[in-house]
Amino acid sequence: MKIAFATQDMQQVDAHFGWARHIAVYEIDEVGYHFVQTFDFGAELAEDGNEDKLAPKLEAIRDCAILYVAAIGGSGAARVVAMKIHPIKVPQPEPIMDILDKLQEVLKGTPPPWLRKVMNKGRERDFDFEDDEEKTHG
Image (cartoon, rainbow, N blue to C red; front, side, top):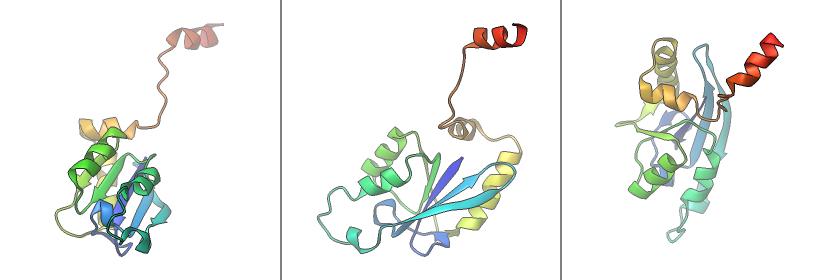
């Protein structure tokens, strides 16, 4: 599953989602994690009056299951949740690697129900059991 981090310095979760200079994306499962890519937003978002500054960020995280942020506005949070992405607010700057290590430990054990749900994001569920029976018994 992919996890996104709002960051100013690429080292820790330390950015408001709307004003983050970077979104770092990692892939994680119970075996390990690896860096996927960084989305850079730089100066273009620093201008006041850029009404939909969230659009490129929402596009960047569209296939992520979880978004870690230092802060996120109400409308931003609503749009993230509508995309079936679970936002998590980090109360103080925290290293991305520490969060990944903790999350991986949770995945190795018994993840809480909300995490099991987001882990399935993007996976197609196939409930057509009749086809399976025909293939195995045919």
